Amino acid sequence: MALLIPFVFLAYIVLYAFAFSIPPAASWLGVGHAQHVQEPLQDSFESWLVEEEKIALDKLLANVAPGGRNVQDAAPGSVIASPSREHPNYFYQWVRDAAITTGTLVDLYADDTSSPLASELSSLLDDYAELQDKIQHTSNPSGTFSDLSGLGEPKFEADGTPFVGSWGRPQRDGPALRAITLMAYLRAYNTSHPSLWDSDNADDWFQPFYEASMPPNSMIKADLEYVAQYWNQSGFDLWEEVQGLHFFTVMVQLRALREGSDLALAFGDHGAADWYAQQASHLTDFLHNFWDEAKGHLVETLHSSRTGLDCGLLLGSLHANPSSYVSHEAIYPPHSDEILLSLLYLVQDQRARFPINSSPSATSPDEDAEILQGTGLGRYPEDVYDGYGTDARGGNPWFLCTSSAAEILYRTATHLSSSSNSTLTITPRGLPFYEALLSSSSLVPEAGKTYGSSDALFHSVIERLRDAGDEFLDVVRVHAEAGGALSEQFDRVTGFERGARDLTWSYGALIQAVRARRAGA
Ligand code: NOJ
Ligand code: NOJ
Image 1 (cartoon, rainbow, N blue to C red):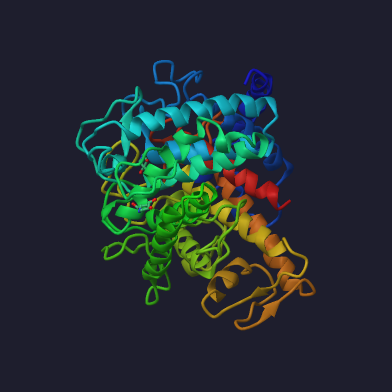
Image 2: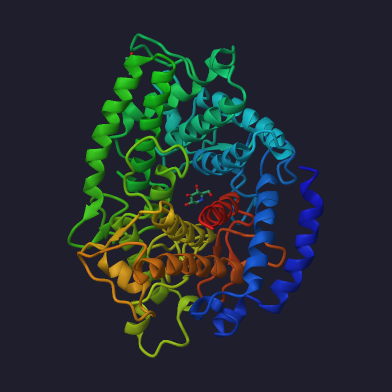
């Protein structure tokens, strides 16, 4: 980590100058906001990205113990959601936030397991695993370890003790996300330390057991058993507000069980491998319920009075479809019609909803509605959480949702351009997305047609996907604080940051979007 410091220091100076030349409020006044400009973004965007990626890693690690400057008093291995201890108090470890952002650290570790950064990260990852093992066994208001019900507890104190206040519990995405992160670490670790599989501490991670006895005796197995046993029971959504069955939760549960089945097989635990595969196939069937034909998009929660458009749809696609380790048929991947349409309609809603998103150059609201351009995205249309409490006038855009939209677009571009003979078939279902994407071009996509590398439209789609991804990240740039800090939200009217400061997940989502951009470059 010491190596990072000089970089980050330089970055501060550069960004400082930057942020002052384009204050967030400028976007409100319609000045200096690059998101409506059709030409490629300037060099300043590229250099911002390079610096912001380093700043994001530094600030993410500041929220991870031991060693993080914001978490001196937290248990080793804890990842706090934000250093903010009041207004709002986010000084807790959420199982979801911690698993997702630790997953980003695993990706960085896996890039080059012999790098100095990787050895720093490896010790943090070991601490994370050790603390999660302890947390799994901690009785809490959701239940205990003996029947696994306690694994549905969404958040713990920074010292690893249970949080006993009232809360939206249980949340059933946590164990799935934690298993995904631990399995990814195990795979990455194993590429450089092939002896792990039979070493003593492998038992803490995954251990076969051949009777259907409870509780399981290892970390990943406990999470997988929880998912396999409880996935069809309702719980709170990723935003901790509504009880029901949720797209994001089901998507990550499916990935956990599929990869868990592979892992069980590798350990010779055939009973578990079959059981997880069986549940995964039920989950695959069940997922089709989230497509709403009448609405023409996916919905986040079944039988809900909301529209169902939700940033959780984007996150579900991203977190259930790994960009590496692809051993199963993708389900609702970023490039699927269903995800791209849901993104389009969410973007259209949020453009119209938040003043900072309105385009000063549009001559009519219709003109604005039919395009796909960088937009500050919030969680969902009906949101009223303003980062501190309830605001009946509505919520705000979130950094992590805006970055996730960029990641969806980059990954779609990479998918299309990755193989030399890849093609794009425009279906009647997917047509509105491609029309909106190409609205500023003279090329007109046609339903039922297949385009390949000899077609201009194919190349325009890829280029426009990448440019649109950049426009979303440029919204992050415009609203980031001087010094590159990212909070949870930015104000829908003034554009200034709101809500918990230095949100760990905001940094993780930015890093993932930048990685996805680079992967397709
Ligand atoms: C509120 C968000 O809705 C939830 O997803 C998150 O886990 C917590 N904040 C902590 O960041
Ligand atoms: C029995 C299997 O053998 C075991 O490994 C599996 O995970 C459980 N059933 C499910 O609880």
